[in-house]
Image (cartoon, rainbow, N blue to C red; front, top):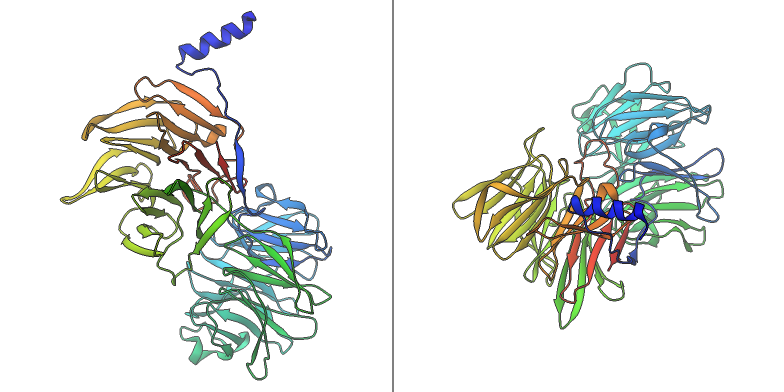
Length: 545
């Protein structure tokens, strides 16, 4: 053995870290190339620009091949982009839903930003170069902006019911869908007087109704209006009569559309991350395939020896065959419609599943056999994870402010704090033992032993970099996704010895502004077969070891 290697080995042993015994990760499932596809537009260069809010980027796509030729990211001022538009001078504008900013990138690359309000979402230009944005979900209103983002925003109307993806009509009116009302409307923006009641104080007309959840509209070069509905329908609307024609039916969760100079439609999916092109004859071609968009928690249920792997994918719950990776099902979460709310983490609870959603601020118990929500808890403070422990619900809460994180136990006698933590993340259970990881401090702590709460908790491991999902392996050791170093670790809870099982995993996608630092929170679970499943939130993959 070379002396230098022996020296390093001795150092590892002294630190309680075993030499690497790497398992070769196998990608069981490959997901989408984007972390959800949102607003789109064809740029002056003829390329398709696609905003990805969760991916914190704007992808520049070749419209013929579907290849991503460029990505605009944080170095370009991008921060959670939701929709985008091009100005008359070729400047690219985008909205950031969770920061409230509208950002302009000039043709020379100069960046200018203006804060409008939280929830700023759709954006469009009039034919005369006027700039309009609206608020959704975190606010409700319509504004006109100075294209230079210099003068203060002009408030036009509020209480619209979430005016979403908008476009300027050939008749000089603003067209857009009302998310909560199942209709598409047009507005004379100059008739509004800062209306509290836009129906009474604006010239607002219903163009078409009867939609499920209309998400966006666009006019083509022939003056025809098109809309996408969250139920998967792509529709052409006769503005004069309100009649609709379904051009294509795609998977649910559609977000936006763009139209090129040849009147070809491009449709994006927020929940699946795909982008497709719809030809004038109705043919559909995939440009960017869809699938997993932000895989988080993982749980395994087994029946008859077959393992089904469930993945919380933020906008959906997805299930896969544990051997082949074949998709077995997908349950999508629709804001304000579905009982299931945006699952970020998933854990097994007998034949059921436990979800947490920091986005919807809920913890839920779900029966996958009947696709029904059995229990919903909406009074936890930003829940990041949850497991069943000795019949009780144990939840990792981020809390409402810095230093407010904790792990709590829901008992028949009320809620009990098991331990304060900075950013509680992974939770693992084995009989009467309970462990928790702290993403911020890098610790793994044992909170309960033999059914008794430990005070203070027992430190099992320290010095980890952003530990996320945890699970107990069949031999009683802990499996931990160390997202900061992109590794899967095995920790002996009795000795603290750490073994590196896998390296270079595509985990640790950075959080966008306004979200918990754990963001997708890559998970790990073990099946009865001994197979280990890990979600890679950075590359939208599911690994199997």
